[in-house]
Image (cartoon, rainbow, N blue to C red; front, side, top):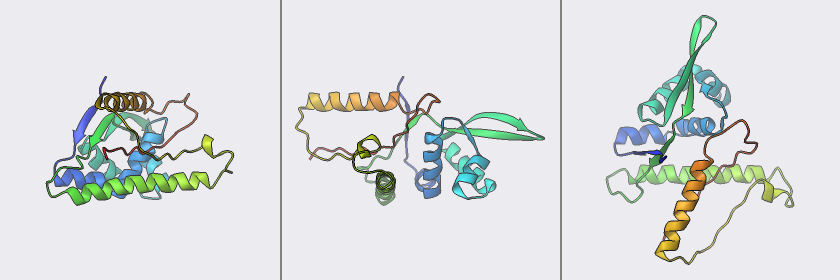
Length: 181
């Protein structure tokens, strides 16, 4: 089944999504094998649960985070959140006055993944690093059909492995950037 796509078209949506704290919350929800509460996220982000709850409501408003379930904890009802199964389209080439925000978000996503890659690489010696991270760069020479097949296969593989499960022992973060040169 194809993932639902969200196109960020309005300034309000873009501002909600590009907030760095919210980006980290989305990342933590994607890494988690179980849904998380506002308190779970607050503890990891060193924020108040009320602040996290505010951010979660904003992310829920644009459809990138959703309620998984509610549970009772003593006399309180607790809400558990998960990353929504959506693909967010930034529409990088769109000329609508929000291009700067889109470019800043893309740069932050790439830079954040790169910094976390470097931190992981520094924890291992060079003989082990291939088991903990990889960085590839180059040029491919593809026919239009080869490009279509490559993008389809990569997309299908990523979609089939993008949900954390208890049996998954390794979590791999990625950024794939490819363009027609």
